[in-house]
Image (cartoon, rainbow, N blue to C red; front, side, top):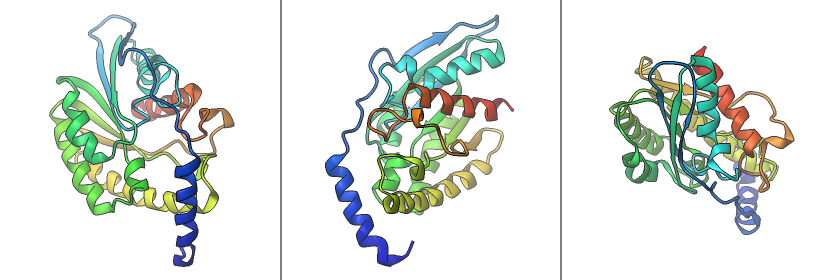
Length: 230
């Protein structure tokens, strides 16, 4: 980005902090089971930031983890037991030290939803690399497969002014490149899945125009499931 625009970015960032009223975390149980056909249940866990915490959805049954479990149960013909561990504002460091240790072991699939707060906090790609490597080392010991979801597209967030959105998008792209590189080192166990392509429908976002709505979480989860099972 043109350095001349950085004062605009700073001013818009201050305005956003003063005006944005983030949606609260989803309520209800953070675990559940989606019935399916015969066979042992597939064990799914989602861990990360406010999207793992379901901000923008009323109940965790409307969040990303439950939506992904529903789609995986339909695609695999197996029941899916799911859990989600998330915290509003969590950076990769907090995910690593406070949230990942809360997950169980012997999981089939873990999806990491993180990075947006690292972008907004100004974390450098080398800092993201350090934390993500440590997170994946831990998760690989807990699950047969780990998916790192791409950072949501700041450029599409209705709540963000255009210049700030472009600045954050450029920073997110830099972290996503690191994520893709790290996951490619062990393709049998780790996989990077970028954010859904194209412009999301207006109903994708919740009341704060920043986090997904229940529909947004479902569309996002279905995109991940489609590319995962493909």
